[in-house]
Image (cartoon, rainbow, N blue to C red):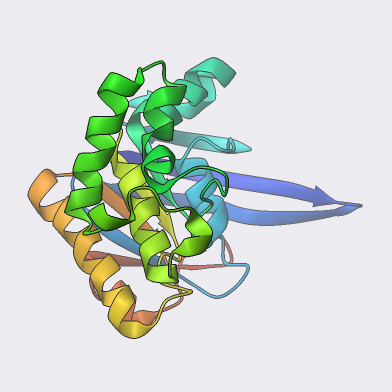
Length: 221
């Protein structure tokens, strides 16, 4: 599903080069639940951004669902993200002026689907994450755990092949975080979706099928 082949990502800060990734080779098969760990500055966020087509490598190859991100162009990357990748963020990134059901339906609406198709699918996911009663609430009326479940429902509404989760339990208590991890594991095991989760939490990482540890932009053997 994801292939990193000798990938380097170099940023320039003034006269200094920062090697966020330094020759990383890592393959994530379809349907795997992978946790990515490492200290600050190890390259975790860069790995996630490159996996999601939010950035391109300086050298080496990044392939997502059989497509090289370097060859897609801006329009191709937009379609890749819109139709094949669901993003789950630590701080939820819900639209504050939209109701819960509208937040979930938004990716489908942006892709040209009408309300008639988008809203029922959003409602079905609301039921799945146990938030049917919150359908018409605004994000600031929800708890942190509820907002994260809405964010996961939004990520799943496009039926993505890949879900990228950036510290999805970082702002949640342990019980609520466990529910989020159970949902991610279920999506991987029962639906065959690939899950890549960046986390600092060893307990959260143990829910994954495999843990990749990064240090200084490389796999930490």
